[in-house]
Length: 114
Length: 118
Image (cartoon, chains in turn brown, red):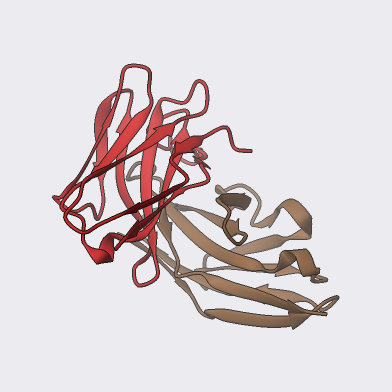
């Protein structure tokens, strides 16, 4: 079985300050982990993915995430927030032993203040 | 633009009715997935088809069904609709039906169909 917990439902930062969105996962097998972003009234866009290669993963728009097996975490970071980063972010896990089904976290709404 | 298309974009209907949502996967993708996004349940996997065959089932109600046609487009049928079925329904597609070991089989999402049941 696999599950994802996003520790914050809302995060508010000021433009130009760092972003940290926290995610913990549970998986019976070696997982693949992802972050997706959903802008208002839009579909889901893949930000970055971890698939057992480098533990520090770089994604689009300056985001990156670090896979920490010992902590079962996959936190998303960005050094400097931009107004256009305001969106809903989803941490997602798939169990490589159980097909391709994605399990989504509850989402974190990121608000960026000017 | 992911290459996955969904129609209609919006759908408003009444309780007890039946609707059909349509999804066209990216060219060459054999696998189609349906997800439901609602305020109380979040984003949930419903069902997966691969090359016309059902591959995996998630939290899909018995009132809901899906199929994938020979041209690989898929339809999600929702019947005896209830107020709680109001949600955003996403379709995604991928090349293969499963992940192979450490190799991730990326899913590309469509823009969604927003269903409102009144």
